[in-house]
Length: 62
Image (cartoon, rainbow, N blue to C red; front, side, top):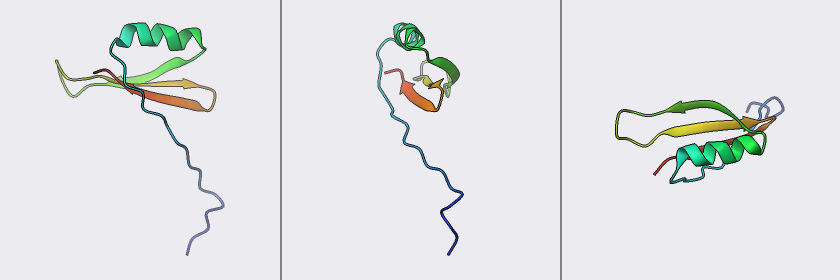
């Protein structure tokens, strides 16, 4: 079996939000930066990734 020595793991919280713009402002005030966002199309939820140092948060709009 392979060694786990060089492997890294991380848990990324997924936080549901109802207002993506207000949430982005809130997290930016806490020092997070928007890393990326994605939607499969118009009218579908947007998934956003925020990052601050080694901390990453995903939040989909609902």
